[in-house]
Image (cartoon, rainbow, N blue to C red; front, side, top):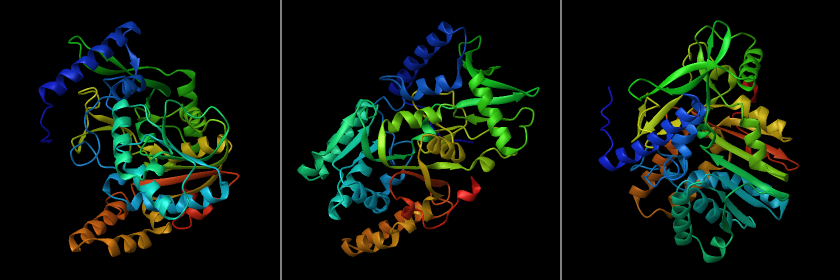
Length: 393
């Protein structure tokens, strides 16, 4: 039983405005829209969606905590992993997908500056104007002026040939996901419609060719069909999204951090209702249709699908492991020791140790979050020397 209080009056009015826009689209689309479209509007509708509006999302005052918000150690370990790639490339950019509060960019750039491995440009692909401004203010305040001058915000991925690194932390779980179901051995897709009271409800529609092909591809990989009434998620657009994000990249590395599973674990028979859920004020909310624009809607990542998308885009799979293994393999112990040596007092040292626990313990982020890397004409395998999980893919 949740103890989560209802949103305040202003938030409810904001949600009602977005809900009205979604109802208008449902009526204009023949009385239903795919769930993926509903999720897209809830998260990204201009000025109203969860990630487009101005409410606090990250940290203790928001709805969830991401690894970069815990402190600098996460970004410093990422920096250790990508520094050899930056050195090998020489002229290189870093492209961060979704910049959050700017904490990751700040900590990463400060660490790369300290080891003499700054990229020529640090680019943030951020759709939210409010988050862009928050990132800009934070980075301008904490970075040296000449380092801040390397940062820019993009409206779209690069259109000209480039080399460098793409980084995305907790981005894939927020891509609008397709929900499918099996009924009488056929593939159906969840749509959102309106009931007699104008409330949002989920109904089934026959899946189109793309969704059906995606589900059948998963069944072939699992070597068994899904059971009757099995429901889960699928990202048929993932290969196209990866291609779009990297653009005309000539050389470089891709690095993704997110929560999820390899395909055989994602689609286990007992996980018969998928992984879809929502977050509001650090509570898991089962009703993903509630309060549009006020809660984060998310689904776990099928890392096998990500491996297929990355290699299909012409990259080599560099490695796949848990977040704990990745951070430990990229110098977490050294980064902790260095931070403790500069800590002001024992309280600060205790916070650093708590940060490490949150990042690495299995019941925290250590095992639930996983890391996958890809490389094109650069060496990136050095970042994945501990805890290899590629055999699960």
